[in-house]
Length: 273
Ligand SMILES: NC(=O)c1ccc[n+]([C@@H]2O[C@H](COP(=O)([O-])OP(=O)(O)OC[C@H]3O[C@@H](n4cnc5c(N)ncnc54)[C@H](O)[C@@H]3O)[C@@H](O)[C@H]2O)c1
Image: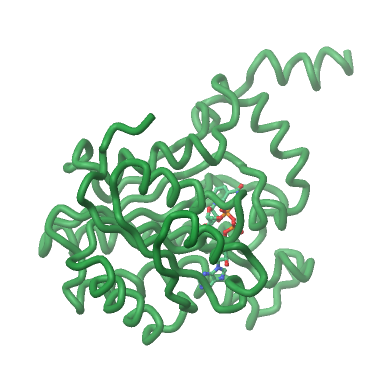
């Protein structure tokens, strides 16, 4: 059931690859809530993934872009305004990739060209997106911009590798740009720090299955799934959160504040007693 929370709003959603993608769920819910949107992903993802099917389902356009390429991002914001008929009210950055993780390079044996790519794709692209949008004056007053992150930005999670550095940078960019965008254009910028979620990007992280189970047991409410993450994104795009900006918002069932749960005691301590 929709609440019409985004009625009349225009959005751009980056990163819907397949039905598991968090961005996919956000796109579906945004349209359900009354928004009109455009989708964007890389040309490669459009060939390998199902972005085109989602566009058909939602009757919206897909604009191909590599989020590390400024000219591509300019196209996304110029075309999105044309297609949607005005300035953009919300943007989702749901993009992450580490060539080091993909190639199994450990944190003390990083390939530095890969490392630069990890940071560019997963973090600096967020800055590029906002700098492009601001220069084009593409975002409406009161607009809302979100990126998705993970608690590995603050605490060490084995296997998260150089993506942890990318997430720290991403969250810092949200604060830095949130300040200038808020001051100059009344646009808010936040990150949502999501539970581990079984998606294509998520499954690239080493030991994902064990981590999903561990995090679930360490969270009083259990892991938040992709649908629930999409609900939170919708609220953050809506007018109900007009004064929330420059925040890293945990959406993790309580994981980030929990030291030990009885489920973990049962699993690891009692079993070994
Ligand atoms: N899955 C998890 O456990 C989890 C947890 C917390 C945060 N996140 C974050 O959520 C976001 C979305 O990931 P997901 O889990 O839905 O996985 P996903 O694999 O479905 O989405 C990642 C997207 O990034 C896109 N992408 C990669 N390189 C790109 C580039 N150069 N330009 C534009 N797009 C590019 C991919 O095509 C894909 O659509 C990521 O930032 C991820 O780090 C995921």
